[in-house]
Length: 271
Image 1 (spheres, helix red, strand yellow):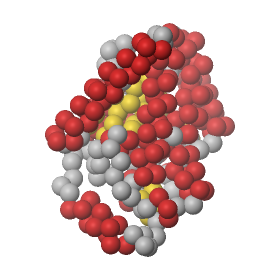
Image 2 (cartoon, one colour):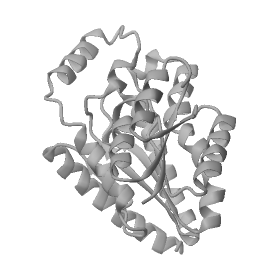
Image 3 (cartoon, one colour):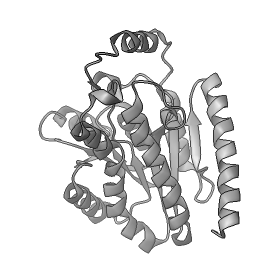
């Protein structure tokens, strides 16, 4: 069984995955902000299920460092990091300030950078481990009014690719799970921008999203559990979780991108 850290585990995919892995015998640490305030109930509920809850704010490097130190002091090792913490800004790119753009990247992209930076010295030292990033198919196909979110996830995907090759000599894996839109609290907690002068198109976008038949979030949870339990060295770089038409299209795109990447690396002498 593995020692697993999951960030952003108070709700959504993180919470469901923490519960599922704990029920399967893994030693799970749920990284959650404000565990003595607004997330105190989440801490109580997860603790009752055998999940160890630790304070972790992914926007703060010192918080990430403390969380990893606390985890290692208790568990003695760390096998898997699931970088799940995230949020979404919805609206025309023009409507957001540079400060808001920074906020979007601070959680979705730099959050993983901070946590991985804290964890990697220990994973390298033990010669094993895996970083699992929660990405999005929006990073592959960007829709209007989701530009900031898509950009942050595209950046996360690029970092995942770099980590994958850089860390392989140390026995550490880096992979990403690209999920379609599933009903979780991320939508309830979204930050919306003023839509003028995009009101008509933005209204149509919101209506279209609302009319979609929601998928089952358990599909993402099941895929994450499978990635955690996949033997070392056998995890695919990218895992897509999406309804059939989206899955097929993104899979073809990923396959082509992987072939191009191999050709580029070969041509430039990169191993």
